[in-house]
Image (cartoon, rainbow, N blue to C red; front, side, top):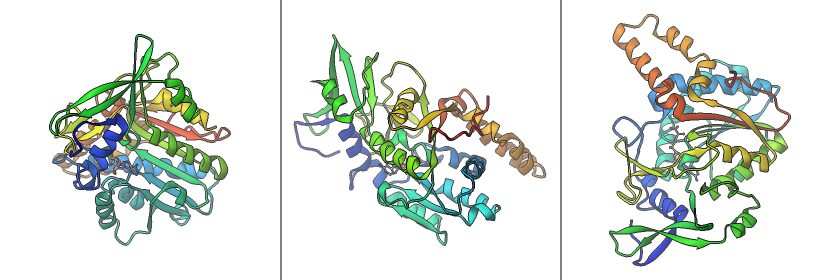
Length: 350
Ligand SMILES: C[S@@+](CC[C@H](N)C(=O)[O-])C[C@H]1O[C@@H](n2cnc3c(N)ncnc32)[C@H](O)[C@@H]1O
């Protein structure tokens, strides 16, 4: 990353530059997905994942009393794989399909091009910002979206709070610099208390802004937000920031612009943020339970029934990657945020 000598960037600004700098940012000029990329997301592991999300979306729509027109918004479309597979499932449910307006909210122009190519001839609207969403009930799907948003990091030392920043003293040698801050001032600015009982805070101002807009849409026109993401439910936040290159974790100050930077969502904090914006986010489970509740095992059995052994084995190998509790099955959590008076627990049954 090129920057002036002696420049200091707060962590969120640093991540934003490393991932989304127009010329050099990680997401702006390469396709990170797949076995040959740096990481693989669930829709790129198996189509069964997107099929389950499609089925979930249809039942959630039914629970909203089948609105004649509604928005489905994918937050962060990646390489377009999930929406592509969801659309082919929706085609089997015309009464749903005729009512559904597909939207993708994507920041990377490079990935947008890939999405447009993959979704050629499909009716999809690409949103420049979330305020462009038409005034209808809206179902938001966010798979590995929030963990890609820049965060701020704060550390408490000797009863004082410091914000972690990056100092570039030489072009090639960035280092961490913790700067004394007044956390109360920050909490006052966002109107939300984040420091109670914490020694470390990871907080994304951008996620907070997006959730504010989304909550308003859901509260006025109805709908919900389904989040699937790498994360935990710890009471105390941890330092979870890491870079990912060639499927391996590393130091975020190395390979800047050439590796992804992500963190683990703290779902307890997320729930508090939703509550702050008057939504209910009590439904939370892990990816394994969610997908199994939706019938992924029976679906795998059906599609593999008449296949030769090697193809069958491939389907089950991929299924295991999605639901094995040692891996994505438990590392990934699923959360649903809705209006307070919405009752829906499909996928979240115990
Ligand atoms: C980890 S990828 C997940 C992609 C996809 N959902 C999947 O499961 O394969 C994160 C996606 O979010 C997009 N993204 C990150 N920050 C964004 C922002 N502020 N606004 C819109 N899209 C964003 C990235 O460009 C990328 O497409």
